[in-house]
Amino acid sequence: MSQATPDERYHLITRRLQEVLGGDAIKTLIAQGKTPKCYWGTAPTGRPHVGYFVPLTKIADFLRADVEVKILLADIHAFLDNMKAPLDLVGHRTKYYKFVLLAVFESLGIPTSRLTFVEGSSYQLTKEYNLDNYRLCATVTEHDAKKAGAEVVKQVESPLLSGLLYPGLQALDEQYLDVDFQFGGVDQRKIFTFAELYLPRLGYAKRAHLMNAMVPGLAGGKMSSSDPDSKIDFLDPPDAVRRKIKKAFCEEGNIADNGVLSFVEAVLVPISELRLERAASKATSDTGPGGGSGEAEEQRPFVTDGAPAGTVFSISRDEKYGGPMHFSTYNALREAFEKRDVHPKDLKEAVADALVSLLAPIRKRFEESKEWQEVTELAYPSPVAEKKKKKEKVYHPPPPGKGKNANPATTNAAKDTVNAPADGAKVTSGGDSDN
Image (cartoon, rainbow, N blue to C red; front, side, top):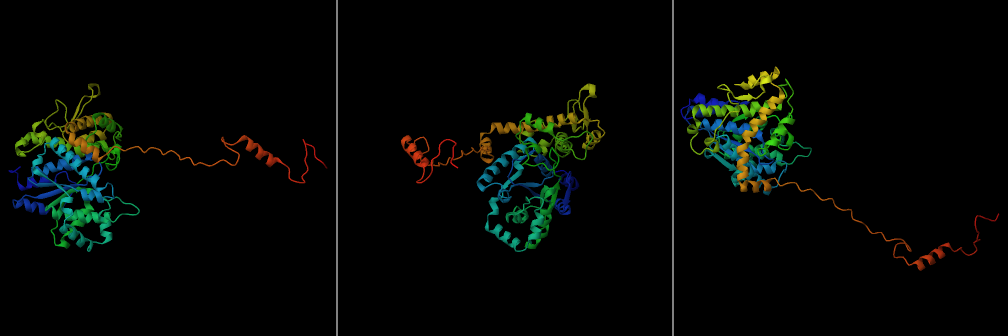
């Protein structure tokens, strides 16, 4: 987008975001004709889910606005995240994440040649980085460190020291990755403001921070890698996608707590708009060489045949129910759902169809890559059911004269001995007794 004005570039960089801190610094860089640099980081812990489409689609905007983008695969952060995985397992998961992210970028038509992937351990184990970490530890209070990580670091009754280090390391990443702004979810806000406060105290520049909204889970609440029913995996087969969408909470007329409707807003409509813009501006030449399969294949918005120009989302319905519905904005869909013009069943089917088509090239790439399949087994090994231990029998020897190996003669003699009267005892017979 080399012919865009500074205002157009800034609009691309900041559209659809929930919050921008330090936007004036980005405007200044653009006005000076400089190329802004940013990074987006992810810790390779649980398997990434379709909620990742939100930041990855936004990265497409950055690239169109001529932003230099670095993707941080934060392996050290993953290890420190409440010890979810040992370092060797994190190493396999880092490779898995790179496979997934590359496949998603290419499915969206994002030119991966203009992205830089960086593993955190490549610089976070250096002498310089660790010295700065010690300098931070000598400056940051326990209160500030705990507060900064409250939304990101898992809160437990007896927290590990690693949770207190996490915000400081993420702040230092901005300096060591040499970027002008960091991009992340709004759940990162406290870490971002922590970085703005403490990096200048080390003599480093204050960076800008851009935040997208969090994607609700299909059952409501945050979409989580640890809750299989709240999220859809990038490699879920079509039947699993449709089953999860069918089970999702989607109450008729309810627009306040509706994971399916929110997913359309946060993921499907932005991707449709991206594809419409690419088609309108012939973005294959605009984005430059090195794009993925998405540049060679048709990038179609989530609309049905015969949809009016500018439609970003369509819902198929039988003619007896009014026929298909087409929406040019998310707000139009939201209003129709609130008025109950759109039935939850029809919305779910449209969302499932869109997701199945969106995930198809990613699954295809996985099925064609033996290396990716092998990495998956190493990164997320199938749980092995523990065999129930047999209860160990403890041998208790029988009392004298008991047991199958007892000598009958000896046993009878023993009985006679036991039953023999003591000296001087009176012997009685039957039930008679002497008075």
